[in-house]
Length: 241
Image (tube, rainbow, N blue to C red):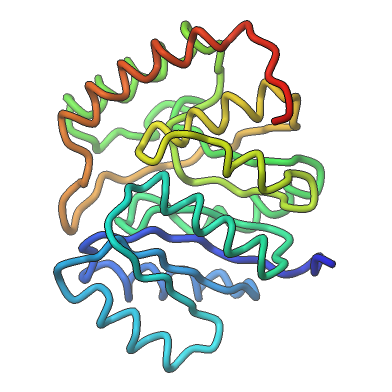
């Protein structure tokens, strides 16, 4: 049976040695009782070493170390771990400093009435004001394409979400085929199609200041191809999902 007050923050990592301690300290400032799960994709820097040191000193911090399989795969594995350990709420976020834990409280409060609470860069102006122009254009264009091809009016490509496990069965995530960045909007596409209750809150997302983005040009091209492929399923009735 799920514990109604058991919360886990799911954080995939790949070479984030300079951000691990920073994100943990920010989470602690929320003063919310929760656990933290790091899913590391075989980092080649000191990320795993730092996580292990902190994990030994904090009983609420856990880690999964694995070979590199992709950020979508990391989220799926983290979600399965959370379901197995009977959490009631999951907050997923990046480790690069773009996602601010100060929004946790609002996300958790809304999750009492919604199945999934997502965050949006498009509700309020200035949410990505410090981003480089090229990244802004890519983000806005992707948002427009997701609206057009999948009829998704949410900020579907973001990883900063709160999931109410009491309402969404694990199979709704494990059946997602994508193991990369497309996992985020593919999962939201299917959850929306299955009529789960989804809402958004506006957030300020700061551009990464420490470390480098893991997204490459090939990921952008693959996302475009995958979007067209998935759009053919838009009008299909999805059974047993």
